[in-house]
Length: 250
View (cartoon, rainbow, N blue to C red):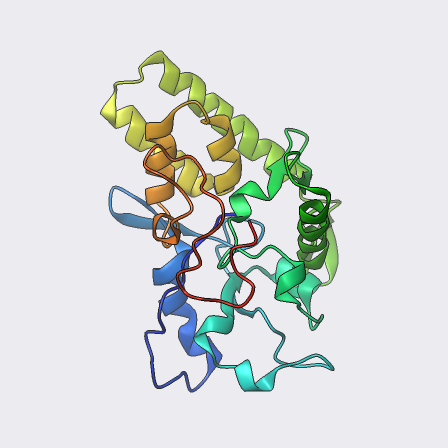
């Protein structure tokens, strides 16, 4: 799960309607770039490329028994989510102290993306941290089925992650064959941007700091999060310079 920094609201006076925040969120945390051109946009939770129906997601639900209608149009309560993550999360109560969230925690360190396509709590976490990571996985259904118009179109999301792994591995082999080729580096970044799954590409290219740094820079709000150092290694905890509730747990 790619960490990000949302920053100050572009509308200090507040949004009239939360949907008005969509383009601002894309500019702050959403789009992937290659050679300065926006190419793809992503779900803040599952990291998939979402061509249509990417939505403004409310961290604290706006409706239901645990709803916070007072936060319905508040910038600090927004992320971006696909239909599946958004639906899985629904109107469930959200306790920031019991979850790892990308706007306030270094979620890159919280989860492991296995080559079999399963997302699990990272091996190096404490038992308490693993519990928080698993709650987050369950909340947004990272290992659940993909639903389209009420129909399960994929038993789970594993195949898409496996395909992302295969794409990243192929790109790594190409890169290793000519690591000083600037055109090849740009093409590799473009492949990463268009395929999605930032965390998988970062894992596959773990031994190549320059490329990891390029991946970080290609996504809005990720370098700005302060979660990676100059060698593109993850820093813990998230600096949480937006001063969000219960931030910096990892």
